[in-house]
Image (spheres, helix red, strand yellow):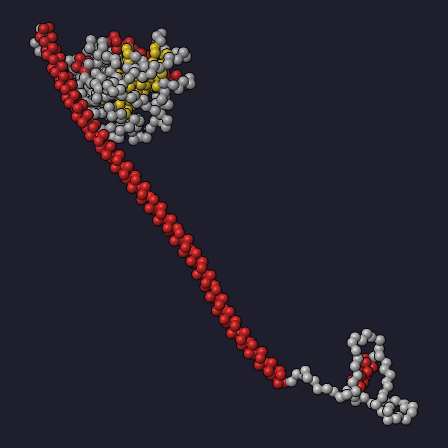
Length: 474
């Protein structure tokens, strides 16, 4: 089949080019008209023929679209030229692309620089505004300084006036002291005594041991053993009146509960408010009102003695000191007999709290405290000292209590007479917490009869407030 198709294809091509010849059995003689007429019979396989089948009797026409080697060479040269141009254009495009990239980077840097310049401008603006505000504040501070300076000048003038008034009052006090001395000498001469009693030696004016904490503070600080009062403890700091005398404290509420053994039992019963409570000591049938301090060192302190405003006279006899006197919510002395009964109930420690006229508070604590019976003159028994006020009470340890009418001290005269109060005097001692309440601190007196603690500001400085309190040993 394939061979027949190729034969047919070749025969068709010969006819188209006019070079076909007729072969076959001739039936009649050919004439001149039949020379150029041929008839053929083709056996064509069944297939679809698309398009016309042309047969030309003329010779082949020249192929105008025939491609020659010259044309191919020209085309190759053109292609080579175009390739070179394309390469050149590629190089140009690459260069232009780099330029575009650089341009984009430059634009980005320009935007960054613009934002940075804007930021610097804002910073400069803020700095200018801040300097202007500082200038205004400086002007305000200058005005305040001028106002404070004028106020200081006014206070300095007032202070000079107060100094003059103080000098006048000091002169009056000195004259009164001289008058009292003259009256004492006259009284002694009237009684027929030939010699005047010797005065006790003056205690040191400047203490040997200054307080550990020299800062002015309203808090009591422990010594270097780090036994500090817990956080949340508070101390009383009364407000001074314009006349130099503290107003009386608010009246404490007397609780209906009790009676209690001591203030520590009051605290254990759930009472956390400082005030007056009823106590009934073991071995005693008496009910005693006492001030319980619960705002210091977890509370439970029984206050034995308080000085704060000079409202109570402490220059009293033996019987008064034995039973007690004063106002429980103000200045008072609980009583030697009550203090003795308290100490019999267990082991107690003593806390002495001192405040000067600058508002600074210091303390002296003794590890144990008790009194002996009245037959022993309520002899004082103390333990070891710790604190920041200095130890001015150990020299009185083991001494009996002395009043104006019962002289039990080691001095040839009566220390209570010279120091104007009852105390466990030695000869006469380094402390006088029941002396005269002098306002202002430093005072002038012939026998140093103020409320002093020698190791803290000396014997010529009268303290502002004093408290003595006890609590069972932890």
